[in-house]
Amino acid sequence: MDIIYDSWPLIDNPVVWFILLVAFICYGLLIRFCFVEKKDGRWFESTQFWHASIRQMLSALPLLGLLGTITGLMDTFSAMSLEGGLALQELITGGIGDALFTTQLGLVLVVPGLLLMGLLNHQRRNWLIRSEHEIVN
Image (tube, rainbow, N blue to C red; front, side, top):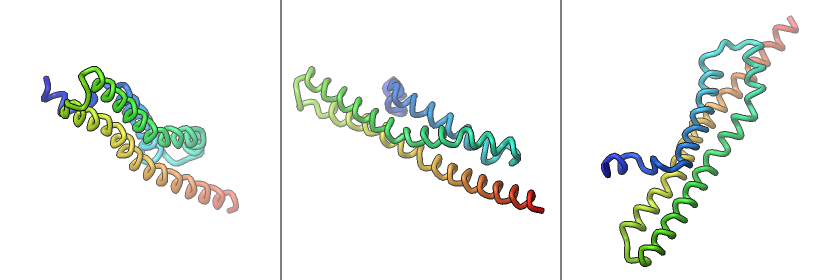
């Protein structure tokens, strides 16, 4: 079982699962809007409705990662105090490494989301320009 745990750091950490859930929702919406749905008036209205929410959820990913780091460090220092201080190098390095994993996860997941958000904004602008041009003609 230790091999499985080492392969998937912090699998039992609720912050990791929450980061993954938020990222899954954001990426699902962004992929749907950027690549799946037909670009029409209904699409534009849907993107208008979800735009601010997606931006807020993407902004939360690095902050959730930081929250996971802080709680992981608190758990590490708490375990150190119970186990007799700084003599337990394995506890310290493993705990800090696991704590930093959440920050890394939040940062890694936000970058592609921001790129997809830029693509969605570009598509929305193009749709607006095309729709205004069609109304004039």
